[in-house]
Structure formats: structure tokens, C-alpha cells
Image (tube, rainbow, N blue to C red; front, top):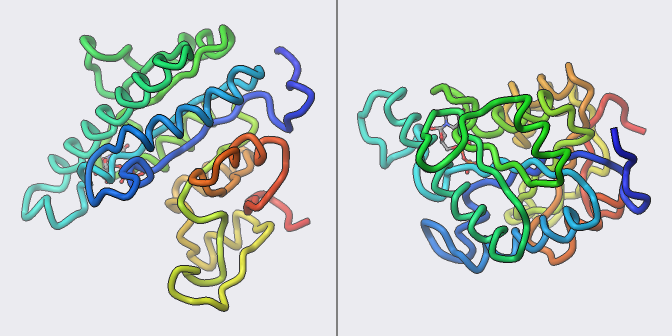
Length: 245
Ligand code: UDP
């Protein structure tokens, strides 16, 4: 396996970005300016040799558990949510290719006209060749979310860390947008996140990262250069791992 580029802490990482981040300041849908800025952040580290897997959520378009789903059967609504993640993956692919980054989209739901089917060994080859691999459609099953898809792919790809890019720069004691006294944790254990029900990622995703020993780094993707800095170990962020120190 190639060496970790000197500046960086990790050789291969998975970046999970929720669909909501892609809305930018819009109330709904895809803001291509925001997609372009996430693509720039990914390109900056990919060009320096970090291998990047990407998982994009679908919450900016459709979620199974939402008002928009009405009384639709949950499984059907969830499949619609998975289709939303494919749209976001294609938008991200377009933005990355526009700035010269080689990408492949692999979908957990077969959709041959727009994406490769998910094939673990092929995805590994893409990463070795320096391509950014975008995993779409989560785990390909209803009753899950893209957090679980991100954790599953991070484990399968042997990632050194799972980066969760959100609109907040880490995990706080309370919602910092509502409570000005809230403080950010520098480190947390998987167990603390699960026991205190801290809403960082789904419990199933956190448990899988715990069992695989893969740290989760929660940081704000909205700040310019933050992904590059977080990969070099420069905060602000919260790291979730097996020990608090
Ligand atoms: N979804 C699913 N199985 C998966 C991944 C996603 O059923 O493996 C559906 C689910 O309805 C979910 C929606 O797709 O609400 C969009 O994904 P998610 O809510 O994770 O998006 P995010 O919150 O990250 O934008």
C-alpha cells in the first residue's frame, strides 16, 4: 500500500456529506455553487495523494421518514431517498470532473446507464489509481441511511478515518445554534456517543466504526480549507475513537 502523503495523517479516507450541505442557502435541492466548493475541497487533497471515497446523502431532495412521504409505505419512500442520493452523486461527479478530478460513481442500486454497480474490488482499484469514488444509494436497502452506507463503505474500503462534513465544526454539548453556552468536545469515545445518544451519526454507523476501529472526524465542510486542515490534524473538529485521550 502506498505511503501516507507526508503532510497528512491519513492515506485513505471516506468523506460523508449530508444532502443538506449541498442546498447551500436554498431551502431545497442542489446548489451547484456549493457542490463546486465541496468539489474544490476534495480536489485539493486528492491532488496531494490522499485517496478519497465520497458518500453524499439525499436529504436535500427526499427522505423516507419525512412529511413529503405522506402515508407512503416506508420502504418505497426509502427507495426514493436512495434515488435522491444518486442525483447528488452525479452532481458531485460533474463538479469534480469539471476541475479535472477523475471520478467513478458506484451505486448500491443497479443503474447501469448512469453509474457502475457497487463492486468492492473494482472500487479499490479506482482508489489505487487516484480516482475519487462516489458511493451512491447508501447500503442499497430501505430502513437505513447514508450514514450507515458511509460507515459500511469506509470499513469495506479499509479507510483510515471517516470524515463527517457538516455545517457545525464538531460535536457540542448542546445545539450551538440554539444554546450559546454549548461547548465543543475535542474527543469522544464511540461508547459516549452511543450511551448519551449524541446525534452525530446513526447508532448503527457509530457501532460499525467502533467494531472496525475507524475514527470518525466531525468538522465543518462550510469553512474554506477545513477538509485539508482536518486531514493534517488541525482543528476545529471532534474526533470519535476508542479512547478519550
Ligand atoms: N436511504 C435508505 N437506505 C440507505 C440510504 C438512504 O433507505 O442505505 C434513504 C432514506 O430514506 C434516507 C434517504 O435515503 O432518509 C436520504 O438519505 P439520508 O437521510 O441519509 O441523507 P442525508 O441526511 O445525509 O442528507
